Structure formats: C-alpha cells, structure tokens
Length: 483
Ligand code: AMP
Image 1 (cartoon, rainbow, N blue to C red):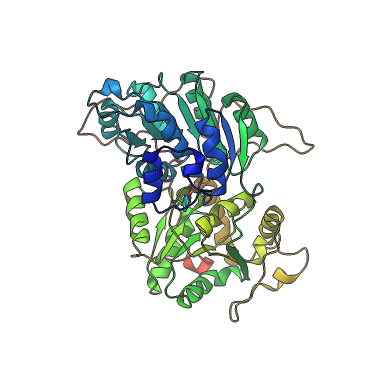
Image 2: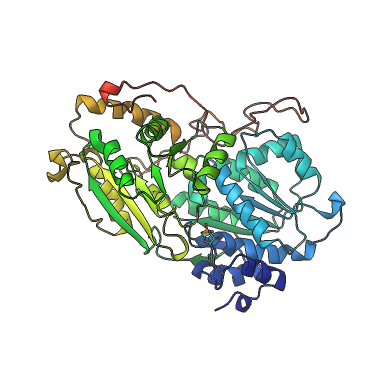
C-alpha cells in the first residue's frame, strides 16, 4: 500500500516523498483514513511506530482548506492543538509538522515552559493554525489571554499515559473545558490504564480504536540482554562495554538526576565522551547536549526517564539501562528509543541482585525472558542467582548510596497516579495534587508572568518538577565521585 492509496492530497504526498518514506507504517495505514474522514481516534501506539505522521498527515489534510498566504493574523486562527507531555516531545512533533506541511501555507509553533514567554507571545500574535504545546505553558498563555482557542477544530493528546504519570491530567481537563465542544479529537497512548480510559471517555466522541502490536509489546527488531553485575561494578562494566563497541553511540538510562551527572563525569574521566540530560538542566543545556549527541559529537548520552521522553534520534543502536526502571512500562518507553522504524536495536540492562524484582516485572510485561550474560570480571553478587533472593532484602554499606539516589529519583519522577489500595479499592481522589496544586481552584501559573517585558527572563512554569538541592554522596560509600 502507498501513501497515495490513503487518500492524501498531493502537497502531503510530496512532503512524505521528500522525507524519504516509501510506504506507510501500520499505524499510519490505520489512522490516516479514519482521521481524514473526521472521526475521533483512540490510538494505541508507542514511539517508533510512525504515529506522529499517523496523526499529523491527516490533521494537515483536514486543515488544508484554511491554508493561505495572507499576512493578516485574522486569516490564521488557531485550528489545531497538539498537546505533548514534555518540551522534547513537543519539539519533536513540531519538527514533524514542519516537515509534512512544507508544501502547505499553514503556520505552526511550539510552546513549552522553562523559557521566556515573550517570544511565544509575539509568535502567537502573528496568527498560527497549529499549536504544539506542553499543558502548563499553554495554560499560562490562556491566563495571559495570549492565545485564542475558540476556533480549535482538532485536538491531539500525544502520549496520554505519560501525561498521567507526570500529573498533567488536571491541566488537560482544564484545557478540554476551554475548547469548542464541536471538534475532532485524537488520543494516543502506549498503554491504557483505567485513568486513561476515563479521560478518553470525557474527551472523545464515538472514537475508532487503532492499535499496532499488542499493548506494551516491544519492537521485534530489538535484541535484549541482561548483564548480571554487582552494583559496585556497574559503572566499570559500562565503561568496559562501551570500550568494546568503540564506534557506537548509546543512550544510557539511570533512575536519578544525581547518578545521571556523576555517571557522565565518570565516563568522561575514562575517555568516553559523554554528557547528561535531566530535569535540573536548563532547556538550552538540554537542547545543546541533544544536538551534540545527534551530531555524533558525544558518544554517550546519560538520561533520566523524564528528560528522555520524546527524544527522537534516528537509528540509535544501543539503549543501556544502567539502572532498571521501577515501572515495567518505563522499560518499554526507554527501549523505544532504539529499533525504530524497522532498524535493528539493542537493549542492554545492567542488573544487580537488588533489581531482580524489577527485572521479573519487566519480563512479565513484555512476555519475554531476557537472556542473561555475565561478563567475566564483572560478576554479580552471589544472591543474584539464589531463587527468591536479591529482591528488596539485605543491603551492604556500599549500597547506602543507592538509597540516597533513590530518594533523588523520587524527585525526578513526577507524581504517579494513585495506586489501588490493598483489597482492590481505590482511595478517594484527592483534590490537592502531590505538588500542592489544588485542582478545585481556577488555574493560576506557579509564578506570576508579566505580559511583555523583554528585559526579564521569566521562568514561568517549567513542565517538570522543581529543582531541589542535591546531596553529594561520598565516593567511599559507593558514590560516583566528582569530576
Ligand atoms: P514516531 O513513532 O512518530 O516517533 O516515528 C519514528 C520514526 O519513524 C521517525 O524518525 C519518523 O521520521 C520515521 N517514520 C515515520 N513514518 C515513516 C514511514 N512511513 N517510513 C519510514 N520512516 C518513517
């Protein structure tokens, strides 16, 4: 099947050809005709499946009737709103919109927190048909009356499950209440929890379900391997593995901001070019680091889950879990950075006895027993191989570091949805969010933002948890040491 068979207009067919795509991916085959026909969609697809083009191409086709070259802002009302959980993902979607709309005179912009609002305000004043936004910053613009949502015809909620993880659902509900009821809505999520289904009920009208692969399944082009290793030897093993693959780049995942920076420094000290990306870094730092990695100037990018969300790096050959995620679904998200669009990928996990519990959760979710290979000289703790041991049991003095890092991890990870209490009953939904936000009150930005003040840099409302102090961890306690 070709893109032309999906009923796309010539402007879009040309853009797709320019991008070098020869045939649509399964999610594109399913979603494009349904969206062109004007239906709401509930899409089950993870990153790497081509879902961005799957919703962007038909969205552009639906909006093509508004395309015009007038300079008047009144001729460029906001017609589509695409919401993404992180700045990185929003930027990635924006790049896709620009790529696919290159032959159509439709305007798009990307607005996200953590940067000055004024440039965004100027851009919005020009008149913009397609706004890609993170929820918090969009609400800041609503508050400032610098965006008009009354003409929105299409809404896309991308990575809804991550929105939930990051505590954005109250913001999403507020945004929904500001949009015209008569609109087309698309919701994409890699997983469908009860919370997501509830949101979909509220947001979508008679949605058509499109889904690729089984839920939570991982790409078949990825080879998984676990290297059992003692926690104290992990960083040496990582350096060893990287030295044995001198020509490859790798994205290395850690659980916490603290480990993130320290591990990058450790690798640098051992002659492996590396940098880190996490929630405490400014947007500019993150963008520069990411660009350096994409340009091949950095071999290793060490990242936390929050910071890495939405990274789109073509043909990334290796994803390495320096620490296993504590939510099995995060494993699926992490390794979705490799094995994209049919390319081969490697998912390598360094697992100590302490993490065996998470490993079995992951294997249960992906329905795959991951092969284990001990690297000689980097053996795990003996309890790794003892049945029923190594869960959350005994800890050595050296592991005390780990405990501090886990605390930091809790800070990096945004508040999660309330888990059902023992006995299966959900506790009543709180009206005060873990970050202190009261959903029952009208929206107010965390920091008051002046409307136009070009001399002031405004940290209006970054879309991530606030920065906190980091405690140094002594090298002798197993910390990664300073540079
Ligand atoms: P996504 O799942 O939207 O993050 O897309 C993953 C990657 O696949 C991106 O780098 C896209 O540029 C690429 N891609 C999307 N659609 C196609 C296609 N039909 N053929 C080849 N590559 C594609």
